Length: 81
Length: 369
Image (cartoon, rainbow over all chains, first blue to last red; front, side, top):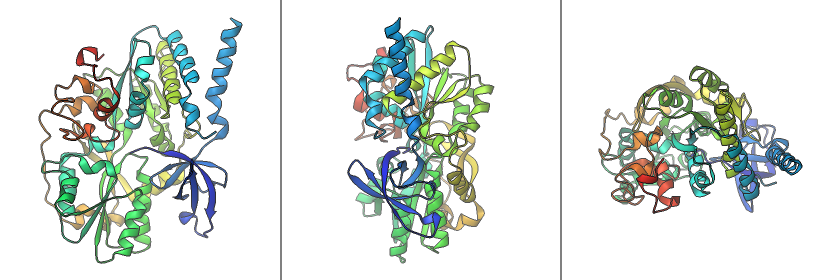
């Protein structure tokens, strides 16, 4: 039930009311209408985490690569030893 | 990055496993809270990659599994009322109540529909003003903002033929209930990444301190889960017990304030009954007074029922991590997804369903660690 899927914001439906702000979000080819009520700062090109039709967070790109950077450094350390 | 495939990388997973092997010195039992994490662990076979010193037990984070039988019975009763369109997430339909499931009610002619978003139920109510549209508001903190927004939308747009049957539950009191039990064997928790996307993790800090238990907020893909396990094992071996955040690409310490505000406006914290576990103080949500006219239990004035569980189902032990599904004598024999004795065998997040789908059939209770 807590399943949430990342998708890319490809269009924002213009609306004066922030509560009703909506976006078209692309999930690897499947496009859905998503409410941006809880992510008012989401912009076109951002990845958002979507749960039951609502974006719950904007994915932090820098943080998303952190684990791989850490693993790369771990690998270099192993090679040095 | 697409933020899914990268976290399924076999090389990254192997490297994390060797990192875990290099730090683990003693046997530890870790519980992942969320049923989505359980399914990811079983599906990707992570348990087979981990050193034998680490045991994973599976937590209560399956809202469908913990919804009490009495509430399922109420849902079925409301769905059968003429003029009612009953909407639910798909998971809930096959969960057995004491007198059948919502799917049985649908087969008998009730108007029961599966929807994707609670806003779809509001739209359905708006389009069919002569019909009473009831939505089964099941879920943890992840789902509460969407359901709260559906109620606020109905209130603002005066969609008076919309109502919700509330079965909302909260994670932190459940963690405390698990830790307080005398048979608890959990040394550390992988915290629920999407619940914490909404709520943040400040409320977990006193729990980690009080019970001296590490809690690592963790994502849902194999690399996330292995990194979460690595962080938890490091804490255990160093005798630390704090809240750490593995899922930093989505979770901030304070969570999503807009979502929290919406929930706080519509819902208040109440006691809730958990299927298989019992009543837990402050573990649920109910509609606040200004929104209570959208409460299906009030609108349909149903008598209180206390329904019994199927006596053979050991869901209570499974949901608290005391037993693994394969330790249940009924597993895969008298209890299957087609003919379930309890909800964890039905739900797409239930631990029993995960073992049924993904665990090796030769795995018997003798192998259950």
